[in-house]
Each structure stands twice: as structure tokens, then as C-alpha cells.
Length: 200
Image (cartoon, rainbow, N blue to C red; front, side, top):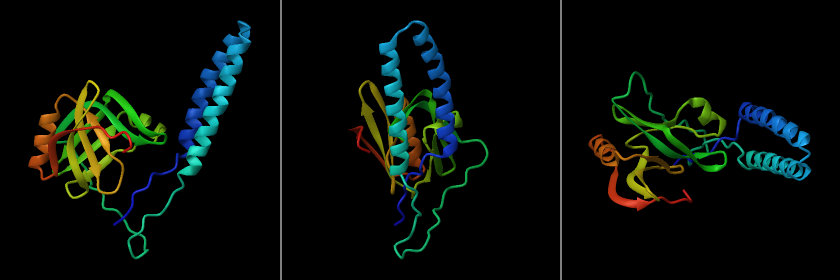
């Protein structure tokens, strides 16, 4: 079985995040200097340096690895080709694997779409997903080990567990509609509600 591994944060995303922080940081530093708030300035500089260090170490810890088969030869993963307008669409919030572990996308940034017998769970706009490494889940019924009813504090939703990869979540009040639709398309659906596993 192939093993899916997270890609390291691209340099373009790092550059964009650094640029944004330099702009905001420059404004804050200017204000703090003018107000002579030296204590807050020290805290800000130390915090910024710590965040930068964490980003660098996180990127190095996720080294790219080539996907191979059990025989050791390179293996191309079959990804469903999606075209045209989706047959169904649901909007809500979501929990996606990203550069810094599981990351949250608030409503209405998470979108679940169905194309024939394939689904796509993504973050919109795409720039937000790319900035934080929140890649879309694109799969058909054979790529998914389980689609299950999920819940967390004050929210209900759906969990998507790929055969080889971390779990994705869509948080929406239309949980039953999503599950019944995916079940009719042949996806392995579990209706028993399950609490979100924060380790996934």
C-alpha cells in the first residue's frame, strides 16, 4: 500500500508569511517605539523570533519522501479527475491537516463537493489553503476507509478517513444529508456519532 506523506512548506508560502509578518511587525514596532513601550517591544521581538524558529524546524521535520510500492518502485497515486460543476455542494467550517498540525477553517471557508462518484473537501479561497499547507481531499469511494458522523463541542459534522492519511472534518448542520448522499454513492458510511479524535 502506498503511504501518503505531507509535503514540506513551499518557499513561496514561507516568503508570503514572512512578508506579511514584516509588514504587521513593522507597524507594531513603530507604534511601540513611539510610545516607548520597551517591555512590550522586547516581548514582541522574542515572540517573533520564536515563531520563526518553529516554522523553520517544522519545515525541516517534514522532509519530502517519494511514494513507493511494496516492491520499492515509484508508485503513482490515482487521483480522481474532477471537471465541470459539482452535483452537490455543502459549505461549513472544517478541520484540515496543515503545516502546523490540524488547522481550522471557519465558516464558510470549508467546502465539500460531489462530482459523480468522487468528492472533494477543500478550503476556499485556495490562497488561504496554500499559505498554511491545507491541501484538499480528493477521493472516490475506494480511496476512503470511512466516512463517519462526528461531533465536537457545540458542533456536528462529518469525518473523512482516507486509507493512507490523516482525517479531515467538515462541520455542518447538514450532516445527515451529506452522509445519506455519500452512502448512496457507495462510500463506507458510519452513522454512529463519534467524538473528533484530535490526534488524527
